[in-house]
Length: 111
Image 1 (cartoon, rainbow, N blue to C red):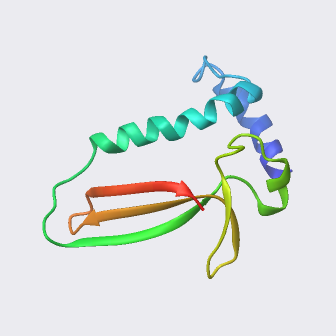
Image 2 (cartoon, rainbow, N blue to C red):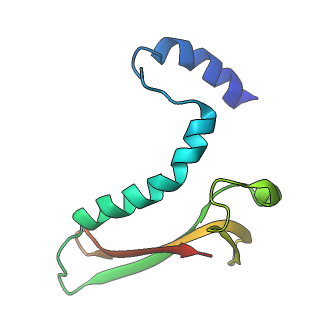
């Protein structure tokens, strides 16, 4: 409810700042393309190997696990997975960065 109230306060004041806003339905249709565009962008931002690298991974939830049965945006792409924190529905992001914080490699795959 806080989100909806905040949205109602912000939306009228920022309408001129974002004249090309799409409807919620169109936003849901466009979301899967965001992953593709993010991947293309990250490939252009890769750094150089300096000999020291750090690897980590994190789950990227696409929705709350209780609503996974009704999720439609990444239908057929998102999967269930479990780690030490609990169950997740979505993707897992693996990152490798060098000692300067530059991205060396990444992989996004279903859990």
